[in-house]
Amino acid sequence: MAKSVTVKQPILRLEESRRQYARATRVLVGGVNSPVRSFMSVGGEPLIVERGEGPFIYDADGNEYVDFICGWGALILGHARREVLQAVQATLEKGTILGLTNELEIELAERIIEAFPSIELVRFVNSGTEAAMTAIRLARAYTGRRKILKFEGCYHGHLDYLLTKAGSGLATYSLPASDGVPEEITRDTITVPYNDADAVESVFKQAGPEIACVIVEPIAGNMGVVPPKQGFLEALREITERYGSLLIFDEVITGFRVARGGAQELYGVRPDLTCLGKIIGGGFPIGAVGGRAEIMKLLTPTGRVYQAGTFSGNPISMSAGIATIDLLTPQLYERLEHLSSTLERGVVEAAKNSNANILTNRVGSMFSLFFTDRRRVENYSDVQSSDRARFTQLFWEMVRRGVLLPPSPFETIFVSASHDEAVVKRAVEAFAEAFRVIGEAA
Ligand code: KE4
Image (cartoon, rainbow, N blue to C red; front, side, top):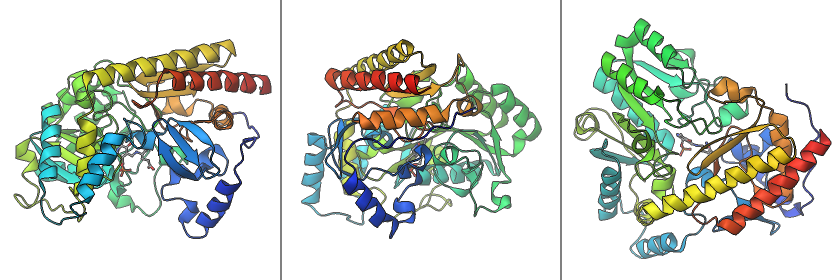
């Protein structure tokens, strides 16, 4: 049971953040444009940030933080990477939205197809939400079926029929579902525990011929990081094939993150459709859905599944995505692995030295820690049993020490290629002091 803790505000100077946040709340709902930024889940006022540079982010008071939010996973190269900015500046010289197809869209799509053998055709959209929405519409059209199976704690964006027992902001605010979504919209959405292939099998035994698709984060990143158990993804592949349903991998986080070809490269399981986002936009708004040509061709204009978007494939997002992907070399992934494993080892060591009971889950440069005595965290209920109050204490102790974790235990700590050994060492030292303070306060 979470112990109630008084959240001591950081000792940093935060007056300007406070002033700007007060102003923001007068014109923006909750003072934010996405709920997880409100810091409500960690019981305090949010930072207002001014700029980012490499692994650092600076708030309105000029405080410097080592950033582990990294644009919620979009910034695998870190903030303001020179090559990305130069590519965008060169594109801007030719205008902004051009309104018709531009070569940059072809270039980025070719890179995605080269990295993802399961993808034969791509459609760019402007967010991960749109990618998931389009993928599900395609699955329903292709199979002629209505039902969708998703997993507790997975988040695929804020589309009506997937806002059931979702992760990210819904988990943060303990919302089993969202208001404003009529019951008949989610009636066809079946939700089972993550990593539970038996539950999937039994649902398919009952309703398999009605199920259009299974949508899954192949490595969950919206309940903290929860990797797939051995054989889980293979089971989803086998079951969906057996019943003629489609398998959708939501790789909005994992695409180009855990490997150039995402989780499907790492685990060797090929979905029918893939959702992408974040990294492929290089820090600009983006989403994409890709898959087998026979499915993708159902989209307008070649098919009857309507989908459209004013800014889809816009040159700015395309050029930032191309510049980013062209820097994702095998050496870069080796460096990310080295930095991330160093960080994880340091955090585990620091916690042990302060008798803080934590468990870490990590896949490549996606990392989470949970305050729990459990030996494994494999699904949403395991995550929910962790001590959120302790996480809140840790979060603010780290802010005090100039290290910015995602403001929720249901998010992922991301390491970027701009983080170096010195920055990781600084973060580990901050973790060690924070665990000590928390331990003393216990
Ligand atoms: P967007 O619509 O926010 O671009 O993408 C939705 C989405 C889809 N699929 C996965 C696996 C995702 O993680 C996301 C969005 N991730 C959250 C953070 N966990 C975005 C941050 C936010 O909501 O502000």
